[in-house]
Length: 316
Image (cartoon, rainbow, N blue to C red; front, side, top):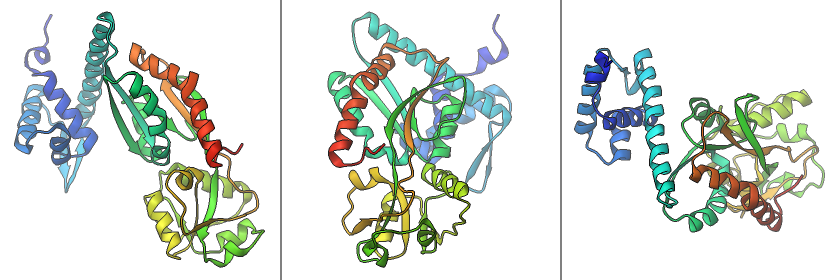
């Protein structure tokens, strides 16, 4: 039996376009991501809206607020497109090909080592397309809960029985200052002294900020950050310029450089956190996603650890 929606909903392309509008927060960004003109994207979304018979979103200023119908359509679009991607990979598997798309979503700081994890895999499977999304912890958690991707790299994953996870790498958080800062000359620094300095912090939703706030809460120490910056590299340059001190992942220094910076010897630091490799237990693995999971388990993790040990990062 065909419903009214079956008869009028339009094409998979329209669902793909709507999903892009949702994920990129607007018509302009979606059209750029899809390499389509803005009028084309608007027209296709309008056709889909007419087929469904109710508004999919409302525009408030420059922001799109999706309606309940819009969110339901986005969720269905994601499932339908995922199923077609799975079918495409299964057919490729039957033909003996290793091709398809691998979707990864990773928190900002992990972008420093993810290329080292992907490099050997991409050499082995050159026909696999990689879609890499980078965001802060809050943004990646949203994608994880929506099931937008195949795998996720995140610190402090939620305790959810529907999730599988592997402890991937240590992620020590260290205190930094400019090389000429007075604290850089001291051999022993209390956490209170550090917090009394002008402090630069990542934005709300950042995993680094979450870890720092949890650490200080347990120590019953209050921190009043003087500046919020949404980028590790920008914080490093601000610290280098003498705007204050900060606590960042050691990975940002090992892979991103630390010229002009000093790692401070602060009591109880580094803060010991870890990266986790996470996926949804109920989401079926294609041969490609299974191959990548095996790559991470069998050699990717160990190679990363050796590289980090060589660079002096992999503290326990």
